[in-house]
Length: 246
Image (cartoon, rainbow, N blue to C red; front, side):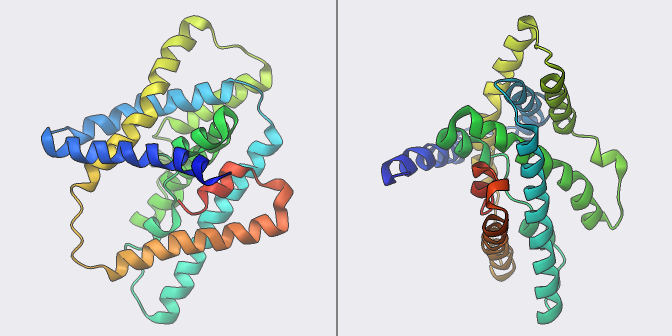
């Protein structure tokens, strides 16, 4: 991919984030409502329509899901070891270090860079990361596994339904597909706009812990990705490699 292609892929994503940031300063927005629309309507519709369009390679789905789990747990292990050796408190560091931004950033980047096939793979990463966040992430944050939280978000159900439709050869009725596609079209723009709005509320009073989390997420993600790619190159989808550093 040449420099121009990279610019055309990345810049539009950040431009929409900037629009959200600026618009959030002009108009008072209900970020909670925007998030609810994405989480319960646009996001699940995007997952379902992406997985039911085209042809899904179930082997690739499994490898992509495995790679996502590998990245998250590997970075978590590195953070655990680093905090133990350095004596730094790990409180509040695990979640931002372990979990990549598999929604706001990965989905549009995968779509722009690799088209519908890339978006389909990125949706698998997104659904897997969401499942991990609502299970492992909640367990880390609360100290116990909460099954009700694990299955509260609809992304997992949408992914399972989409893969089931693919496996059985079931076609989504056009009467349902069209409104689902309209809802899916909301997801990525609202994700990016809401990210921009959310950035206005960040107050960085201390930089060392956030820097540690950022370096762990970016550096640890790429390091784990490099290990996985070098040993299992034929097993890893390109959008998954893209997600390592996000």
